[in-house]
Length: 289
Image (spheres, rainbow, N blue to C red):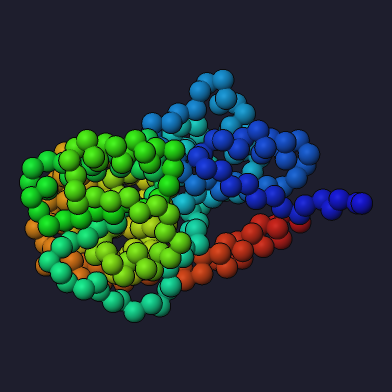
C-alpha cells in the first residue's frame, strides 16, 4: 500500500515544549508542520540541554499557535527568541451551546460554585481552594462548591476535604453534560496555578455564569475584574480568598455580572472556532504549496 505524503502536519502539544522531537522529525523529512501549544506556565522551564532542539522546532514550523497571548509571550521569554510574526492566538472548540438562553438556577438561598477540571493540584490548584473554604468565615456561609473532573489525585483531594472538615464540598466526577452543570450552579471558580485558556471558563461565560479565576495564562484576557467576573491577583490562598470575598459581597449581582460575561466572551471567541482554524490551516497549506 502506498502511503500518501501529508501536505501539512499539525502537532498539538500539552505544554510549550513536549513535541519538539516529533517536530524535528518532520523538519528532517521536509514535511511542513504547524505547532499548537495548549499551555505554558512560569513553573515549567526548558532545561538548557533541550533548548537547541526546542528552538529548532519553533524555527522550522510554518506557524506556531497558542491558546492565549500569555502563553505566546511566556514561550518567547523562555526560549529567548521572538516567534512573531509567524505565531498567533487560536481558540479551541467548546461544548456549550452558543445561542443557549441565559437561564438562571433556582434561588434556594445557597450560592453554588462549580470547580471544573482535571484533579491535578499542580496545575489546577484545587488544594488552594480547599484551604480557603476551610477557614471559619467560609464554613459559616451558605456557599457550596462542586468539584467536577477525574484524575490521579482525586482520593487525596477528597481525603484533604474530609480532614479539613468541609461539609459543603462534594466531588461529582466527570460531567458529560456541561449545560446540565450550569443549570444548577451560579458560577465557576478556578484556583489554577497554570493554564492555557480554560474551555470551562469560556463555557461558563457563554452560559452567563460568574467566573472567579486566578490571574494565570489567558484567564484575565477574557475576564475583566469586577465587571465580567472576579480575578485573584495570584494563585495563592490570600489572593483567592480576596477575590472570593469580593464576589461574595456582590452575590446579589451575580446574574447581572454573568450576563455581562456572556456578552464579553462572544466578542472574544468565535462561534465556530474549529471552522476558523480550518480556514487558517487552508491558508498555511496554500502558502506552503
